[in-house]
Length: 127
Image (tube, rainbow, N blue to C red; front, side):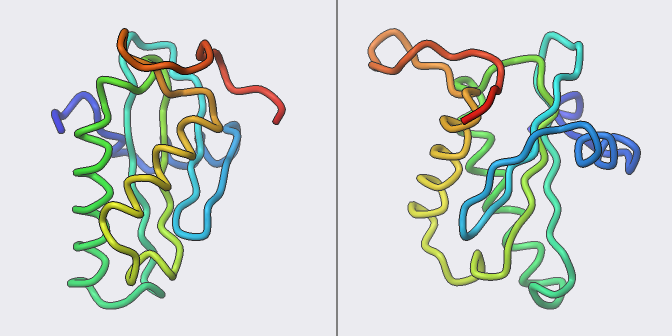
């Protein structure tokens, strides 16, 4: 994931939590807030209660890889924070990939490619 696509500053994470809208699964929470840019930026939060550094880094690597491969399908112009929940340690990679896809779809941030059938995407709104 390139440098411009990453959320790095604590202020950006705090703004997303304060102003953003969230969607949750048993494994991951997605927080989305518009960013007024022509591209989306991504941040990953994995708390210390998930385990030691090796476990936390593995979870972050998995989340980053899933988002990297799905990046062309994600609406531009959003700051997205993915917050790992405790059970994410035991989930299979493909299950985690489906969970993130479902969160993005529920948030109306998934763009279908020309061959895919999906309802039109829009800004997040009430469910």
